[in-house]
Length: 231
Ligand code: 5RP
Image (cartoon, rainbow, N blue to C red; front, side, top):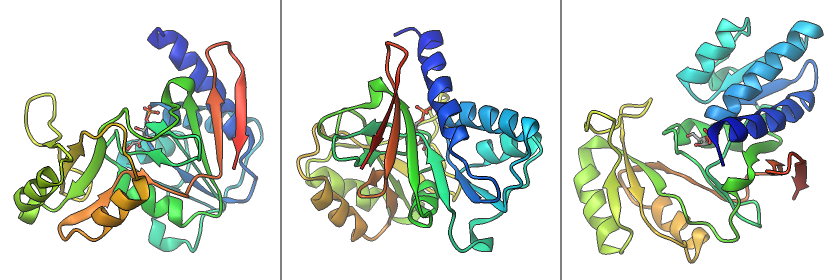
């Protein structure tokens, strides 16, 4: 699919998601190219008829900047109890609504906002759909202090870890000053088992397996239709 065509699909899913935001609510806003369209659409809606959102929390400095440039005030997650809704993108979504996220490196904040939201909607184009999780490197955020040991342990488990690098070949550094190890496992045979292993590995800050977190997915199909899939 051409990028322009894919962008059109992302934009349409984003428009529908923006229409679902309730005035006066507390909104979580994710990260990525699809979410960028969502912020555009949210801005348009807010300009036509003010949403008077009680608070907005977001999952990256990129989204924060775009929101603030469009006149929204962004709160810290610690300033709210729970968001009413988080709208985010995803890198892969399985049939059971489990997903891989963190392609943009914002997984830690994304998961923290997701688990502190009453409802989670992902907006994706159909290229993100898989029957079984895999088909995309699984990001694992690791503390620099123990990253080499963690990498060796992951390699010994056959998980093929590789440090994520920037375009100029340096290690990618997250919002929190950590590194990302991308695991090359396809398919992931038992995502819950892998999540449990990673959750207990000292030195791992967070990982990109988002299991049992998503309630609804807006899928932009290449025929131009938007499918609203609810759990
Ligand atoms: C960032 C993410 C994004 O939501 C994910 O990478 C999807 O991005 P895009 O909409 O650009 O495909 O998890 O960490």
